[in-house]
Image (cartoon, rainbow, N blue to C red; front, side, top):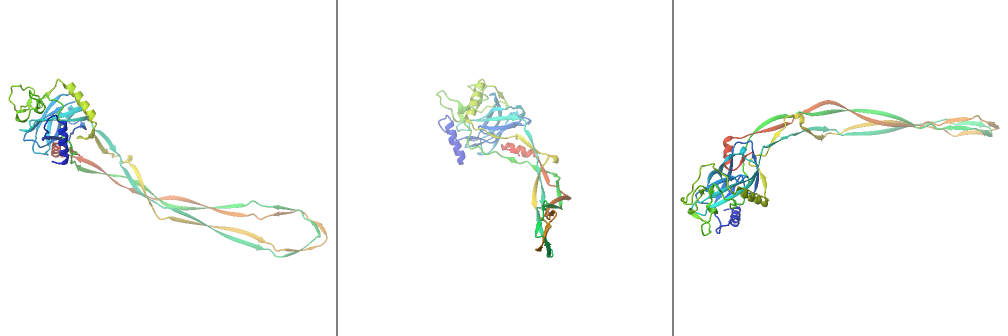
Length: 417
């Protein structure tokens, strides 16, 4: 027996009110104690549940399904041997006849000539129509980006003019009124334009379909065995829950599993009513309240899905796809602009002056040479020379389920995915 199973054995010993610990243990497979599961109400398949047993005699378990109202449904029997073998029980309710709420299965058996067993597996079912979500892919295109480097170079040409020397005779006393005009600085703007070739990118996805064969997915194994029954069944009498006149629990072959209709004078034997019988117990309100209290106290709900709660489909309208651009940096383009600036100056040598007499000169207006600055402005124009269309492949998966494989998967307590 594995360490997990041994731990389950110890847990059962604590849960059981019997003086002797049980050696025959049951474990849930697809539906486990305190689990929370989705069931597809659109399905007409019968409700089934899987169990495995350890340490039991060569006998069968009588299985009972208890609905949220406390009513019982008699499901098919399952053998107790061999150990660790998954056994499937089929119930008289189809999935489209079920509803959301707390459900239970009861596992009752004489366990051959050993101690009889009575175990209970409580779980919650969320019964409804599976939801559908649409997945919209994102397609990626690759675009090349060309960096631009602008270099401006300026050359200056200086022109110097030297005038010849002069000798001037002027009066000894001269009145020479002058006016000096300084022109504003003149700026010459040179505009240069560079044209770069550009490539545009578009995306047109290509849809392909891939067929996938569904495979059987098994749930994680239950680590702890089922707890002892707290619900006393009506459809069968559980010897493990009965007491003799002294108040002691009955055991062994004398502890027969019988129907509720069996009288006390009937011989001790396994008597079953017809399969798919249903019983409405008198104490169902009390048992429903007790089960709800146990479920709330356990606080161990773990949502799983024997049936798939959500179906995902892939969007086929490619115009709705998002586009992601992956940019690759190409070689840089360098543009060099050379500007020629001209600077002019005049060099005047000293004037030799001879003074003689007196005179008054007319007003002299002097206009200084205008200073010129040259400024170059670069502009870059892009022209589209070609368009590249990217055609990424988007694969839409279609799942097909083999009917025989699905039946075999359900029998093992798994589901097709």
